Image (cartoon, rainbow, N blue to C red):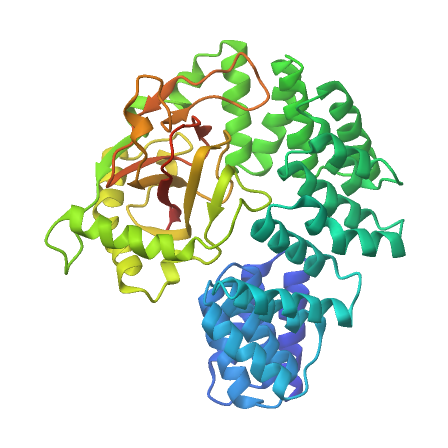
Length: 494
């Protein structure tokens, strides 16, 4: 690499380190676009593109880098990792195995391989690969988190799921991050008090105090606020997750004005953050602020559409039957993942928008018209939803949930989306009762007993419901013996 090229690469890295990621990319692009681009420029460009969220572009540059340096372990590992982030588990597995074959044996590569296998529902192999990562780094927190969650989802046995964590914690009792992972798992296993006890059994740094606040929030918001305040003091600067937990604690204590002071500061720093918008709506509702009605305008913002019939099917009913069969084939886990809203059911592990199954791929053809009609009906405006309406979109995430009888979704929002969805594929007979069993509900902010649902939608097969990602939503538990099958996704402006 010439000295001029090296200077450009170093300057791009410096700009990115200073928070000027776009400027760093702009500086590097002409150099990286050259046919004789130095490998160092490609390596940095791939990294900066990934940090900017441009995963497909990053993968394309990583492929060029691998072609240029076929024996480079870091280049292949980074390509495998990016392919995994893109939701392409088959490709990620292939490149991860190539990385191992040329001498790479890092625990990070084993983790990429394990996640790629998990995304293909190859659970025994995924578990073995997670353990492979841990053989190389016994206290590898990411691998312990994923392995424990996989055991939990396969068995619904909290003790078995905690066993790898317990062994690691016993070897390193001061490992606060491992205690946080175990506490989170116990929370989603229905044992939040035990999770809190695990957290406070050792010293707490700022992330630990935050985790303790979140674990105890629903049971004791005053204690949660104390933990969150200690987290803020230890952090020494404004950190959004800490601020949101402080605001949630104030709301749970019935102090919307105190919460609003934090929320307005967060909104100034992150105006499109969906969690902050949800908290803003909750505070306005509690405070009787008329702006709440505009932000949670159910009539304008919550809309139902029938799916379009994709090419190759004579009717929507015929398509739904095929789609249900395809989705049921993916639901091979016993119970819900950690960190998601469902309880009493399973969720698919791979990004469905990247599926090679033509039946599942056709779903994204069937939703295109409804999404575009929704955006057209929204129009433009200066509110947080309409202000982002470009008339174009891209799918951010996509998954299927199959709830068992008595299953439900806790009230939640989608922090990574702009518009969120619920598409009903198969429904239990219970939804026809007069008790709104299995219905979609909106407006019930969690942890606030007086913030009850204000809007309900009775689901029907083939109906897609679209709504703002910042809007609290959940489902009512249902009885009977049949399951409830849905496919959901988030979209963001393109």
